[in-house]
Length: 125
Image (cartoon, rainbow, N blue to C red; front, side, top):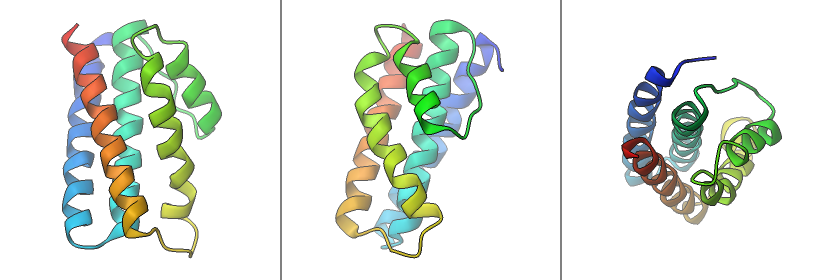
């Protein structure tokens, strides 16, 4: 799903979600900040997979998304643990009534920054 040319568009979306994560963290909207951080990571993953393999799968199964990143190539492997940590917060941030804490949100935004930065490096080649 998607062609190599779509990688920059996914990176641009990741950048938007990272900006939203930063802004909502500053407003003490921790669930929103974490949710945006997760969306940043998913788009960064898509950009990386498109850049390295020419394709990406849209899946709701987080294990499959992490596996896709892991198998995209050696450059993507260091991003996998960060991606998995972010995905582990998705359900709590988006669907559960238990709120995300300030510390969790701050970590999520930092992890999103790492994902975005890693994707930027890979797209630069």
